[in-house]
Length: 210
Image (cartoon, rainbow, N blue to C red; front, side):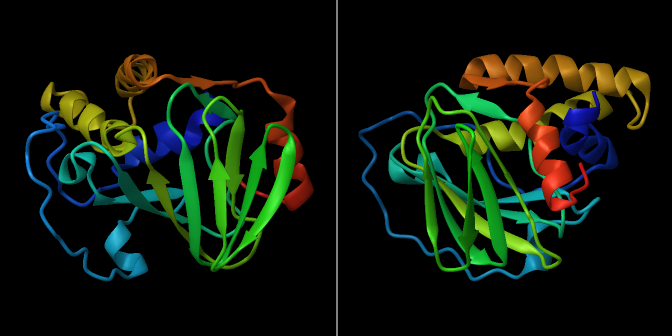
């Protein structure tokens, strides 16, 4: 469970997401409408343990299922998710503030603010903040509504458990999270490699906290 602390510990602590509708509208017949996403500040993303905070910016349902994106905050010297692969979702990262470290298929890249990084589906990867300053980036998804996955992980699953009377920070809550995340992973084609030694190698090399 240790390497998924970025999920289970954060979720048990109740990291909030901006309130958004989570049901995808699958109709391709709806005409596209213009919209504007207001500028944000780091405090708009959410509060919690500071490991990995997410704000949905553009929903796939707003673009007739063509595109969505989220804003991500990673605290200084923290590593993100365990090494994993997306069977379908491509990710295009734009670093807004700070410096991102990205491991893709064993190769590490350092992405400075103002730069893009593309992570095609089918390649194992993770990201991290190698510096003493906050990291903010936009993650864009051109071919899957991955914001629904993130909302399920950070909001919907823990909210369902709490509604059932299961209290956070209990073994029952952690078990419920694990079951819910397994179902979510299967639905969105995400596979985690919890024992990949490269994860700990990154932690040691950059002096990170999980």
